[in-house]
Image (cartoon, rainbow over the protein chains, first blue to last red):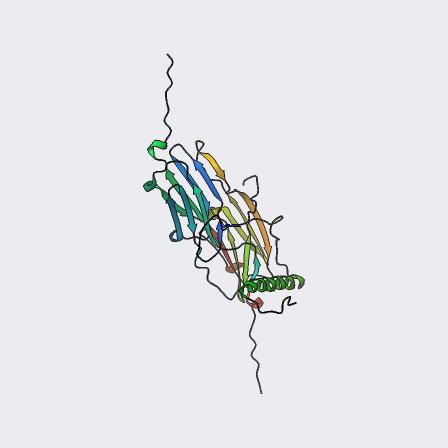
Length: 134
Length: 152
């Protein structure tokens, strides 16, 4: 077992100035990890309840946006005894500062976690410059 | 306590709904049945739960993205459900450098007492798309029965 406890993080709703989504519904900001290796950028986002077909990833100029829709929440006649978390769609966008090889972007989703792999374009991969002594 | 005797637009409907839910929660709590109501913010425990009740069953849902089934431990005793588990951190090797790290990892444990007993043999747990759904059937004696009124 891990030696620390998982903390509750409440869902944050997307502020209107951040996204220009005119579609109906509530949008939340998913928690993300962004990491970089020598050859790629990796974005991991928690979007529980979203099916792979309901994810839209868009890279326009240098803005990467992720939209995940939660569908299939069928209304039922069951009464809520407890509602601690809201259910809604997800939206988040980032400015990508590295040069990314756009056609090679890969996205996969498993257990409610979206993984985006953005390979850096050849010119963005750092080259080692040998230093010679005279 | 109606606080505005005017026509109510759709805006107020949300509030009415909320108020009814609050009233119902209070009445449930004062009847002595214990529904764990964790106030949001401080003191809330992971995972946050939504609980629905229908005449035959309780449905508990929790958003726990990125765990595997074997890291989840669910037990039921009487009317108490215990959820235990661990969310492991991703492993990208040592050469990866993080720019942002918001997704947390760690272990969790949470108990919830339902207003009535559940049948421990008829508990179904389902983990899909990062959402855990627990369906707990009420024992037959706890289910409401329709009683027909006979007229002579």
